[in-house]
Length: 143
Image (cartoon, rainbow, N blue to C red; front, side, top):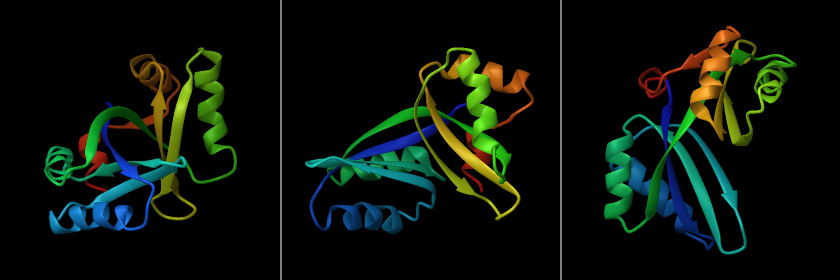
């Protein structure tokens, strides 16, 4: 039930992000979700894409440092408290969230939250036990 995320390390300078997005466009890879975190010297572009293996290869072939990371995608109602309902459950079980990002499918319906947990297997088990919808990678890549 885990999702593979691509993480691309980018120099923090003009033109680097456009180069990364051009690589995806030229390879006909669709970005489903993304997050960009930066420091003074570099940024980390985290991507959920429709073809993980192809994205990994084209980034490497284009000279980018890239890695794959397992993350967990959870669907929640797009309303106040959606995120908190998940946080209460995982926090009570001692599971730490390293980072997260989200996107909305259709406003007012459902949101998808991408989590990097310190223990993804335990998090998935707890979330399913508590009736949350954990989205497998193959379904998320098709959104």
